[in-house]
Image (cartoon, rainbow, N blue to C red; front, side, top):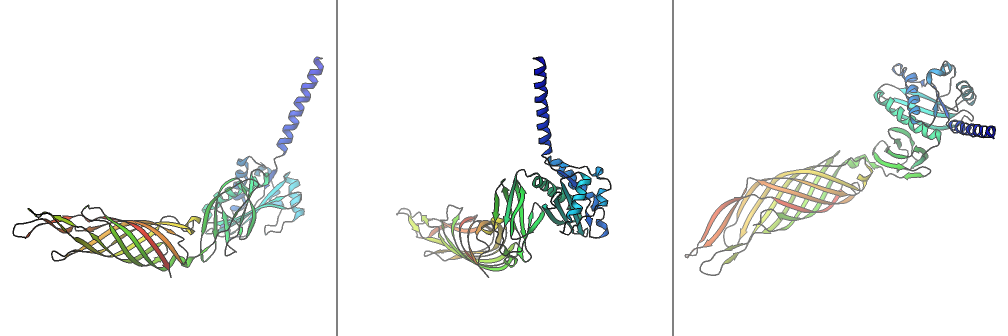
Length: 421
């Protein structure tokens, strides 16, 4: 009986060890070969250092078993593999046998230290099939970081764990697509493998504004994006605005009104420079003490003529996808305000003041032929506004007056339409 228990325990232990070996063997073994150098002599060092970076990054993922580079010995030099897209199946099989690897990672570098072009491919030893390929270009100082990122994704693709796909179709087509800094091809791209989680995607085409967005990849699902690329000339153009604002002076002596304005400007890259003319009439009626008779309501109003220069810029980068639909902006204003105090009971007087202010707004569909916008402003003047105050009416009929200086600051809320040329 005791012997039977021992045999059963040994069998169970063997089964566990065997299962563990099977589980361990599920990890695919990867050997990273030396990279070919087709660039300048100053890139020669990358032939060995870059594969070391790729090998270390893949090891850290714990998704594949990586053959240590020092164990490869002379294999990396003895086996010459094609790096131009044509993989010699016989040489891949030979290298696989020598390295005892399921997957060979091969690559090449070209260009110069100012712009290094790197291509990395994962080739299945048994079939010679390219399981995954990564290509990117960057200055020499950024190459190791991008190679490490690409290696992490490639390890996940090789292992088959937590992989989704990305499909990109741009208008116009032929745009370069970058995922986390590494170029993955040109549009249209169909079901390119990416690891689960968030990725920064950038779509670039010469003559157009870059498109950039962050998206989440779900295992087993294809994420599709269809960016509409905007002509870079949209960053340099004229515009005409017509707008209406609800004008609210902070001083309680002045009543609210409507401000009408027109604007003409030009965008230089991200800076919008322009000039605006506006007009408003807002009452500041005053009750005059007419002792001993009933008080008299004196009808008064200010006519505001405003000529202002504007400088503004967008808040979010134009490369962000959301900027195609909505673009917040902020800016400053300065110029001239003329305020004419008008009443039927006395001569009109005018004040000529320096005006300044800040503004913030949001532009809807900013790269269309026309757009709608909403805006908030706070404006003030210097020096303070001189104002005549009528305190009463004497027995002889004359008005008792005094002069005062008041701060003239106002809030404007409104919006309008922009037409681009």
